[in-house]
Length: 437
Image (tube, rainbow, N blue to C red; front, side, top):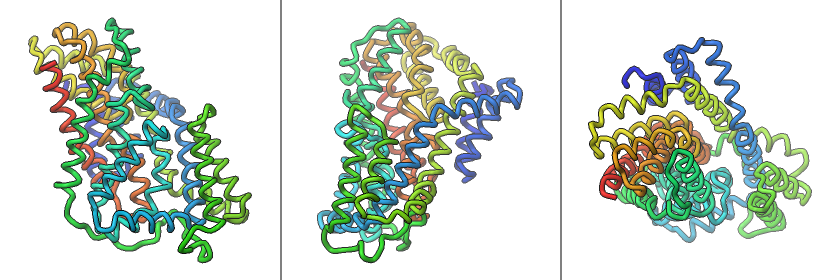
């Protein structure tokens, strides 16, 4: 197991990230190392990495367009009004602020399923509020990641219906038929684990004040002086219509984030909220804000392809399986830990399920786990690494919003806090729950 290419590749990636090597470079180096350790030629490994990048091309484009829309909205000054309104409601209650952030993020997974699309629009203007409250942004990152992850893990609506559907489909393909509506009857355990982790982060770990400098966001241009007003003006209403239109397209049968972002920008420009001559500036701002996360998602898709092509995932699980000795406790522990490593590398819970279900279902049957326990093992193992993975949009999204002024580190301020507060309780609840069910 300790010489398995997948295991070593993920260790290399995590180690490089913790050493503060750029995430993009860490992913590339880890992918090349994984391929070479599996006996793949260097040229073939790089070709596989590049070929797999197309898997996230649509997501990457949507992030850049979304960043441009966020920059456009900020330019109109509507963000200033929004900040004042929220500051008036929150006052000096940091806990309330964080719970509001978690609640809004949760709605992005079900009621208004736009995933991380709301972050570059909502979070940057809230940094002013957070700074006034001396709020530790590590707590904000934890709240955002909770909202981006817990609802689809536990609830059968929005992205959760897709996640649970992938689980039941893959389990059926490997010999265990489960109704999709039954998954949430078990996965609420994982959701409860994440809720406890969130509350610990907000009210214990990061409850102390933390000072931040008052800086203008580096990748978002300040609103024009005439756009900053005490109350909503015509420009602000046009900006609001543009933002709502973008949202409407995303949740309509069209379901396109790309078209929604373009429409929102078009409405704001045609309505005169910003000038035609400002468009270049807005696109550059969008690339500056979300371009990095877009490229990380592209490389993460390529990394996942290399991991699959090594053929080392199944031997990793089989090696661990030989150590079980028929023990359900050891078996559950091994499956959960292996799921953590695989998902940490791939950066996606959804993409992990097909990989582990093919091996976990027969393994769970051989250890006489119940159907409910098997659901919990697969769901928890798939969900684990999404929080804490440097390549996950559940961590990249919060960082993109919280680091627009250069005061939030992706690894130490987002990945490490979310790993500690979500993956540890998920592992404990997953292992104990599987043994007891």
